[in-house]
Image (cartoon, rainbow, N blue to C red):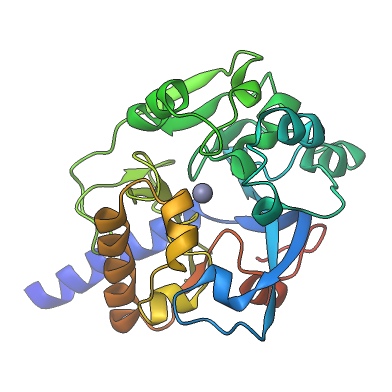
Length: 288
Ligand SMILES: [Zn+2]
């Protein structure tokens, strides 16, 4: 009898978590893409193979709010890039034609209530200036990083319009193997976890659809899914350029690797991995 009531409680809990995430959907808004060598993106990559890398903003519609996770390349990216990116970094950071998220969303009358950043690197924060009215959620240490870091890590002009920062701290509530987390709407459909290493306040986002399919947006801990399945670091030149803390980044790779071993159904979406993202499709196509 007791067992049965526990089971009923479990079912109730599962049902309410699902019910609250009703209608949750997301779409990858591709703002630009680029082509690079496999070897530049991941350790032991091939010098003879080319790979596509995307710059996306993840548009998320929850019944309580419409969110963007990262912003992709924005309307002002050319002037930001040419004025502040050091010349020696420019060749490796090249990008192709830009289709800013704001333009794509305005066309359909979609309003964003909140921006979350996986981290503040230039290619993730470029379009903040296109959404000056929208609050931007980031951990304290990541906001501080925008004040102390210099190009190419961050481009100060991207924050000059006066970002409406909404700093947050994680709670000591374990989630999916992470000791701390932040459940955005209290229904476990959108849960942030700390992924510090690539930058001091890098974060990842777990998104769980109504039917239980779970996605993990991992920012730039790795540029490629292979970085987690390996696990493999970035190419050494690249990681020296972009990873703020090598050991911490390596620990995060291992953590996500272990998580994938336990949860093989989890769909990990690195911010730039076009091979993974092509399978999900792009705005106006939704994953739901
Ligand atoms: Zn980055």
